[in-house]
Length: 572
Image (cartoon, rainbow, N blue to C red; front, side):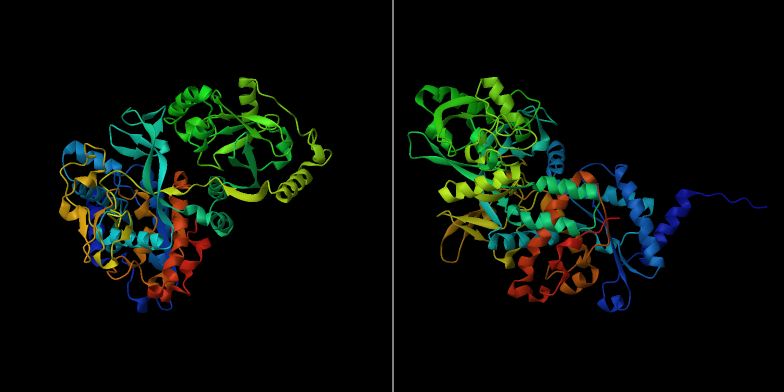
């Protein structure tokens, strides 16, 4: 009797070669092949090609989606199951620096390794739809989408505080900084104001929050996004600064406690701090502001840390009782949330209570448990909800405040001071005007440079490019310089699921016909760690595609399902 043995190296490679030769898992491009057949779009979070190969988390998720893809094919579905590469980013750039080679070489090497490993496992991907975010024929359309955002006022330049690492010459995310140092190298990190591109994700805050209810995702993921967006309904209250013509506004969700506001606190970056600080307190305030500048938002708001602050010497007038209350500067108040100033009610707020106890400030109770208002003038005896409504009405009638909705979500910082990313398709003219690069000139490709480091005077690496790339002369003789920041790694990953549908379209990012058939995604599998970054950014960009849908050049999208964000991804 002949004995058969299973030789994986021989048998699996044999059939994998046959699959590739016959394109066994190829998804049809011809719309005629779609007619009469149901579709099933299975999306994997594509890998970031920063390392030498896959980690165990990659095949864990890919195995589950591959089982379903094979089953759906057997059931007669047209299955779209693509793979590609998230291939821009700082890690690749640093590897290139260490090895003294171009980041594109590192990227190709890593992609080749990733692809070889995935094929060796035997996953049923359609490799004819392979994409890479660092390929010019892909990032041409990333740049095009950015231009559409800019045209509609959803991309803008602003001076914002960032985590700046002088040794590396780049901005770092909050997650990359611990105890004032870069977590990978230990290099010191400081906070500084820098002019950056921002995306106005806050314009979509309410829609992002409401539409999450219609997305078929695990409840835990949805709750993470709700908390990140952080909707708060409250009141903006106006405070006058004593003995001056100046005033400021605070936002509070508890207007019923206004009689208990015994001091106010400003963020160190607040523009009024320098103006209102008295001469006697100026040196102490300046020293504190300088120290706070080098702390991250996470460090500043850590509930476990000891409360610090300094008195400005100025006083505000509480609009409820006309009492003068001291104004302090403290780092637990952030300029990026609310108005950058708060009314402190230590009897009703733990942080304010700790601060008041530390600096021996007055504490006045305004609520008698379980709910009646006390020590609150015309609010006394009312429950909390009625007190909120009554105080809001009173402030609005006196012109001292108004009802307001605010969000924890901040606009998206979209600039990076590095080389290996999408160049911005903009030019700054000599008069400061920002001009878009014509669409016919996209993509704006990355130029060759001598080093992937900032210039000696601190400009981003792209400032090392030759004048042939940097300097622009318009037909009318005006001159300008290209933007030298690059987009963050998130840019290319915000829309890859759309490019997969029409991966080789040279005339548009994706066709209406392909989108009509393949969207929405039927199953998406990715890590929960991306819930409030990648997934939230992708939802925002998806909503912004309405800009495309409503533009005359893309009128064929007007009845397209691209308009309907709620079923962008369906997760099993």
